[in-house]
Length: 305
Image 1 (cartoon, one colour):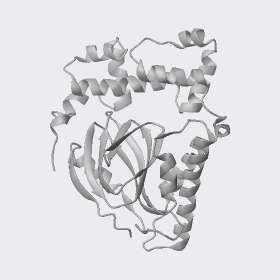
Image 2 (cartoon, one colour):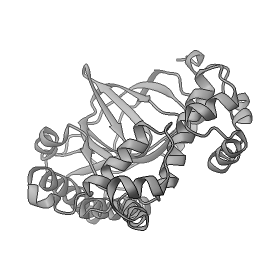
Image 3 (tube, rainbow, N blue to C red):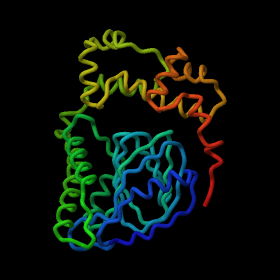
């Protein structure tokens, strides 16, 4: 098995959350100093953090790959900070001190450590977060890759067939990312501009009042088509995305301000308090008040070594 020499330094993520995520990490057979032409998979995990916080650690691995399912994450290493949001991926250096900062109240991502001579060239192109367009051929390939990773049976010892298989999967994934990024023709299945605009509007101006009828009038496209195309590219309806965005921001406000439940509902665009409470409970499993009371006294005060 690869020896990644992981060392925890500091953080504000509660210990029980950290331990749950550490338990999900799989160490794999692979060479830290791979020079055989293969890409070696050294370790992988799917991490979930339900609250803001940070963690700083050092690890001896040449490269790391991130893909964010949801939330927002900053990765700081070698005096450079990379910010990833949902649907973005990046291939970054890993050797040294790394600080991960969860920027929203819920963040879920796939993370793997890699080694191999060819990674240096890929990293030159893919160091800036790569946007996966939902519904495109690239996201289909990514989903297949993630399914393979989740179903991967880990051998006890180094196995040449395992090395060939995982190296091929990772090479195919990174190569498609490069092609999609550098070849304009590969973007022919990109998200329609008006759908992307609605998504951005809901993400950044969620506090405003929206209806499907308003969108239909604004974009001169039937509301049924709007729902169909939005769902195709983002895997949820426009209203589902808007509600989820509102609740995510409501969680942050509940944890970081003294505003009442009614005030928070107004701030995120849900002025009907009963509707806000019911929607919040449906999305999180708890009422806004219970969520606030069950949270740590102050996330910013959860410092430990």
